[in-house]
Length: 295
Image (cartoon, rainbow, N blue to C red; front, side, top):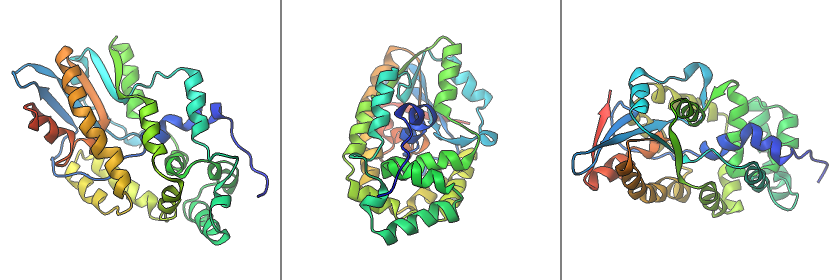
């Protein structure tokens, strides 16, 4: 098998864990228009806060948060993300360990020599990842996390809306919560077989950065319609998309309603959770909520 360097769980957590979890963006949406911020009004007419679509990982120079977004956040007493980022260190280490391929195996042990060589060529020769990082570090990580971790390296200086929002919430003395726990997210990923993870990883090619940048351009333009069009070109999601997007949206709708009724709340989730017939905007409307785009 050869000798591998396996980074400590603490190192993985400190640098990458949150982005790895959150960058598992679902890639299916439907027409909603040019807005990332939506005002929520309960069925009885009570204004209950806002729903905001994030891009979990964004180059520092493309990050933005408009005055309207800032004003909306200040009107709320609670920030709710997909999952609360305030995770105890012991739990962080446990979760970081779960990101690694079990039984001390690496991708080279789970693929043919030809398949592994092709995959390495994509990440090293085509995408520009350092060979030592691929062979000694990333090849030890479960494929479902790997692309997000590699993207973190390739993009250079990045920001995460979830971290930025958490900082603003702390400054505004807002309480924070999550729509689901880290354990619930990990359970979804654990349901994704290693064989399917490897199959999807093998579909990665040199177009990855170009596809990301087109999605990024659409996000900066706040254009969910274009994000939808781009996402529908991704044919690799399948059952994974249903688990990461549709099933989670169905669970979240009632939670959003319950939490928003208690106090004005700023909900921030991946932008593509908002759109489409299975998206949160239409799901909330179907439950009697008024959901209005804030331009």
